[in-house]
Image 1 (cartoon, rainbow, N blue to C red):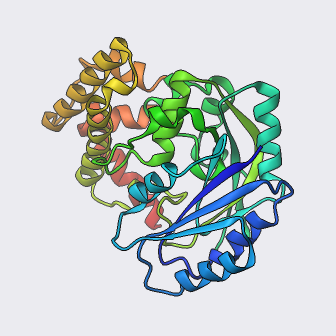
Image 2 (image 1 turned 180 degrees about the horizontal axis):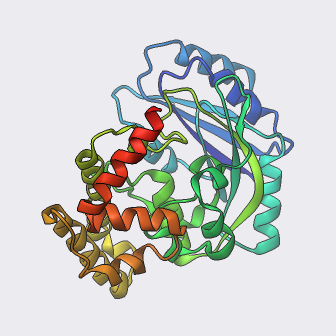
Length: 324
């Protein structure tokens, strides 16, 4: 079975060769590597042209205007011809048997989407953390639930680890293009989990490189914020965008229950902007949403969102301890 691997590139010259080499040297070799470059101004395009000459499996598209990462992947998804497809970042390194193990899991479990853990590494590929799931607190969601309901609030399926059956593309596309926070991988996992079955390989099949220019890194953006109100507004704005996107694309899910919940959640996060001290009247909705998250994460969010007067001194203490 042939697979289409989709790689969106932009200014990727520093690490691109290592990633492409790790794909071309896979133990499973029946694939096309479709690469779309988004108007890179460094030597990315020259590097890509070298690989087109060396390996007939590499197909390159050179964009004439900047699309952005979301629409660059959408461009590639529209060109999938194989039974399954995979996403690839431009700066990671794949384990040699990534494709083979993903395919084996798909066949063993008769599922529609397979994903795996990642090893978090430095820019020089030195290990930082052997389990991305553990680092991000995803282990419970992956191993215990692994379904649409547990994905609904937060994504835990990393795009660069996915193997997906192409028959779902007619539901996945078009990708939501107005959202700042719902990206191609989350949307893909969410749609497939709603209409199909997900499974996972419980080991890291990707070296997830951290180098300070990642589109999505392993560090939380909120950890870098020193102002409490700024952090709280970020929490609220992310979720407002999240549920607004779901509402705008409600026809995809074909579920009145989800449509109603989307509206309730959007109104809830909208109302949080007006809270100055505390308001817990929507606590049942909050805990319904956060029931699949680890408790410490959920409790922190509950305080920040619903009881800011209590969360503020705790936030200041935490930031003070970090500075020490």
